[in-house]
Length: 366
Image (tube, rainbow, N blue to C red; front, side, top):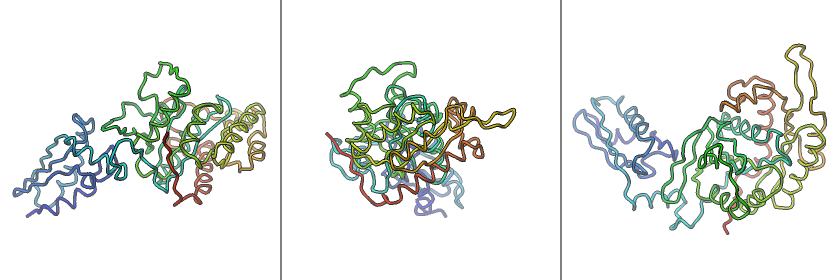
């Protein structure tokens, strides 16, 4: 005869799909009742009308049904009480007693700001593909789309919908194994965001502090072009974070990319490398390699900033096409030359951040 303990052990592998932790560990497994071959599992939902309740039911049923002696599985779903939700929020915040206590990243999380001096160099494309490559390598990865005005990460990762929020916490959405938060989830894609300094500062603070990122290995922050308010705010919240500079080979892009790197040095960020995008184009007819945007920009920027050139990514239509449909090229065409270069960059990022494992990265509040 099936026992309650057998059912409980079977449910250890059932995760809440939004929080990413076992339902028993976060207080969602309310009770188990066994009556002969019938098993009833009572699960508490974090919010009324949870959009993923059907998936929870399926996962619980799939875990219990194969047990010998089980004839029927009933899953009962009810929302948490306010007290239970407050307890869960406190647990996720590391035991903080009030919502004013901001979430702090675990010591093993490496935060990397991806910057460029100017727009149009493919910074967001590089960010998204780096994130997907790191996630495919078994890392827990998140992307903060800090380009509040020109958000594009949700489209590039194929992520749609509205993040779930409860008790002053926001749960990020996920695509290709990457957790994502973006202004694009909160305003229609065609609506312009007309904000100035204080509002931008508050938005970045909320994306860092009010979002439940979980135990990430990497958080990539896709910055807007230039060295303005958003970049300064991020640096103030995350002193000691790393910065990756994206440029193209041309001289104009290289010059402004170096400015972004110099800004890092003045705001307590740590430049770790340069990625040169659109390095060359291979003609599909004759196979000749052509340097459409010139040559040497990435090498020069890396030399002037005193960091390695992590990769040179060729210009490929498939990379742009993948960004338009939410299919990163490192996922859909892993053997493409651009994918190989982007994986090289991901490996270089891994090497550059190894020394930070175990070192705390403080999230500051104001």
